Structure formats: structure tokens, C-alpha cells
Length: 533
Image (cartoon, rainbow, N blue to C red; front, side, top):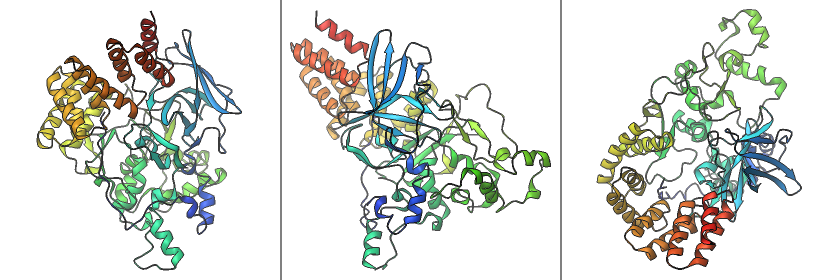
């Protein structure tokens, strides 16, 4: 899907990010305690840190059994091997994503581009298996690019290369984990005022606990509210602590009652609870969680029981005394049970909806006929709703949602043809519906407005090739591959075009470079063989 270029909002008054290391000298105790939390350990170099993956169960197969994987560790780091009917290869695992509390996924660096690995580690079963999103695939997908939006909640001070889809400077992020400034705002001005001894105009740092409920909760919700789909608002810039999250993104959730539990649903679940509704803004994540520290394992039950007893008493519990004793007097065993999630295998998460009685597991699979609504009743324009339905329709191959999206986006584009994200999505829909002329016209307008666009440029190249304008197509495909070199469709198109233009060495070089990124591609290998005959 085409990514819109968002306009940056100048925030000179709050300064730029300076890194957590500059916070530690004045907040040493908090900094030391925070380093032991999952948030502080949510990304880094593979094999680094206190968490240790077990390699006892590191051999496994794809769901259908056609691909054999083996993950291993040596003095150089982590890597995995794959084998599908004699097609074999190896790839390094350079970075991890996830603290290890539930598990970890991994990233591979090829050149200056990051890709998600098809192998992950699952802590609950102490074994390796296919990554989330690969559970139904028998393809060895080594070229799923990592966009900045994927890294923003696991790493800090991400160094993405402008104009690329998944290109990053070295290193790709300056801080592994969630930095101080993610929750407290950029620290440059605050640091300067503290060093100078001047606090005129305040300390220029955000304390979430002192914000109004909407802004306070936005700090946590920026990463703990996934919904069904999240759509960035046009020209909104990047959210910073102290802002209202709904001014920057629209988070869409399923309408009506929903027991299915996506991974990062904690904030959404909490707002469904009777406790949150009765508290009228007083209950928030920080009521029960200290983001800077974790209670010791042997004191965890008592710690969270005390949090409940800020509002409740032992007399509130209706369970038999024997049941309460069996749960070691813990409230969460009954009222915040661990539940399976819908999007990650081998994983359970705490149900933050605080049910009065444990919920039954949803039966019959996940409903596919739900509607989308903006979370919390936040305002959502037709643009965001149309893009949300388009995203879900493409993901689930749902024609009904696709038609909803088409009608909304068609109207929105007629009003705002300068909206590149809407135009790109609408053009793809016209293409799928067989209206190639309208799709090509929109692709041409997008590329003229934004020459750095990738998907529209590739698709426009196809349009021009059908008109016999091969050299223009070649130029577009080469440009797109500079910004996303693992885009296999563009490489195949480019190689065929070069071959037909008589440039056999160029065609072969294009395909060989594709194998650097995806050595498991049978299509590329087959085309190379054809060109070698």
C-alpha cells in the first residue's frame, strides 16, 4: 500500500531527542530499575542482553511441512537454514524485536535494508517456530520489509532513510527498547534548562501522570492500542508525548461485542472494563503499572492485589474462601485471566477487560462480518474509514469491505486529488476491478507529484510497457528498486524488459541481485535458467 508523505510539524519549543543516556545522570535510580523492564529490552542486537533463547527445539517445519527450518547460534551470532525440496539457503539474524517475555521476532540486514525473518522464538514453550503472519504460508518469504511504523514501538530514535520503504542508516536505531523520551517527550530543551539552572517557562518535559486523562492515556495507547487497523491522518506529523493520539491517527476497532483478543489490545480491553467506566478518568495504566520497574516475581501477586485494594476490599470478593486461598489471595487469577490471542501462536496475554467471571474462549473462529468504528468514538473522516476498510479487505480478501472502501475513497479522491495515499489505494482498486485506464491515470498523477513513490511507479511502469514505452518503464522500475531493492515484481518486469531490449547481461545482473535478497525465489531462478539457454 502506498505510504503518504506526512508533513513535519515544527516543534522547536520542545527541542529534539537527546537519548536516555542523558537522563540517567539525574535520574540514576529510575534509569537502573528501568533497564530491567521488558519495555527497555524490546529490541537490540540478536544474542545480546540478559535474555537467552533455548536452542533445544530449534528444528521445525512450515505449517504444511514443505519447508524445514533450523535456527543455530555460533560465535558470529544467530542464523537460520531453510530447505524446501532441495532449495536450500542460510540467513543471518541481526536484530531482535520483543523482550522475550512472550517471545522474540528477528530482523535480517541486507545492505542497508531490514527484513523480517520467518522464524521466531516463543518463550512459553521454549521453542522456535514460524513467525506471526507466516502460519498459513508454505513460501519461504525472506523479503518482508520492515517499515518504520513497525519499529516505532520496539526501538527508539529509528534512523530510517527518507525515500525508501525499509532502508535504514547504520545502526537502524540508536536505542534498543522504549526510550525515556517516548513517554516524556524530547529532552533537548529540558536538558539545557537543567544545565543552566533556569526553569523559566517550566522544565519542558512531560509527566504523563499530570496530564489530563485523554493526553495521559495517549502516551500508553500509542503502542498499547492496536485495534483492527491504524490509519495515519493526512499531514498530521508524528505523535509526541503530551499530544492527543486521535489527532494523529484513527484507530479502528470491531463494532459491537468482541471477545477476540489481538496482541496489543491492553488499553482497548481496559476501557471495556466496569472498573474503567466507573472510575471516570481516574483509572489508567499507571494505576497498576509502574513503567519504570517490575515487582519481584515472588511479590508480584501481592503487588497487584494491593493495586486492586485501592478501590476494593477483601469483602468485595464473592468467591469461596478456599478458591481465594488457592489463588494465593490474588485477584488477577480470576478477574484478569491469561487468554490466548488471535494473532500470535504459542502466546497468551493478560485480559485487561477485568471480567467479573472468566470469559469463555470465542468459539467458531473469528467473525468475518464485523463493521469498523473509530475507537472511543473519536471523529474519523471518510478518508480514514475508506483506507481502513481497504486495508482489511486486502488482508482478508473480502469483497464487501472492498466495495465499501472503493465508494468512500472514490468520493474522497474527487474532493482531494492531491491526497497521494487515497489516490494510490484507489488506483489499486481500479486495477483489481479491471479498469486499467483509470488506474494508470491516477498512477501517473501520483508519480508526477511524488517521484519517490514505489508502488505507483512500479504499476505505472507496467501501464507504459503495455503502451510500448519500454524505456520509460525501465527507468521507473530501476528507480523503484533503488528505494525497495527486494521488490520482486519490479525485478522480474525489469529483467524481462532488458532482455527484450537486447541487454542480456543487464537482465541477468538484475536477477542475480534479486537472489541476494531472496535466494529462495523459484521464479527468479527459473527465469535465470531460461535466459542461460
